[in-house]
Image (tube, rainbow, N blue to C red; front, top):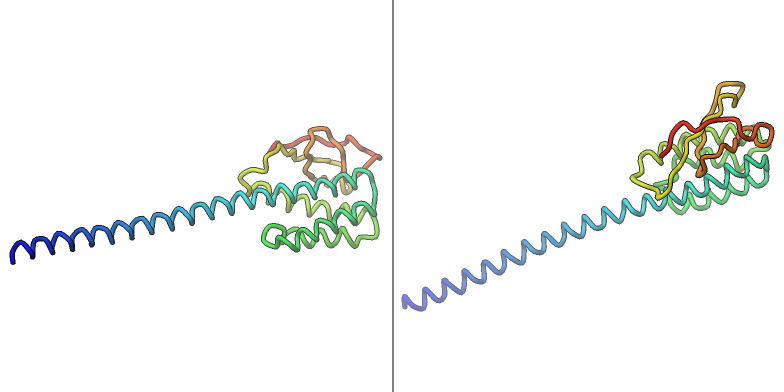
Length: 175
């Protein structure tokens, strides 16, 4: 009877350790899955920011060309993407809608200034977008109040004046 009780206790101890071990592994695996999901989420956000930046550059380039319709189309395309990825682009929608419906380049450029500030904030909050972005500044924009914009190139191509003062401005920050 003592031998049977010892064997039974040993079997129960092994089973108990086995159950505890599987619970610990399960918790660890769940934790690993959550970490993986969180890192994928961050990678996804950075990818979304990079995509938003690409659309932003299309708008900037259309303004550099002083092309009202091209700017409207680029803003409209950005809005379509924004609707698909609400969390990332929500802050940009108001400026994009203003640019899409604007009847003049001047109105588009006012909305672009807000869009530039909003994009800058998104970019600064992001871990990485995989490329160097230049924050540029024109001191003469908006009757010498000045305005910033973002560019993928170091060369100044001023979206606030287009070909009137194409190279007016300077690089203020590299991101």
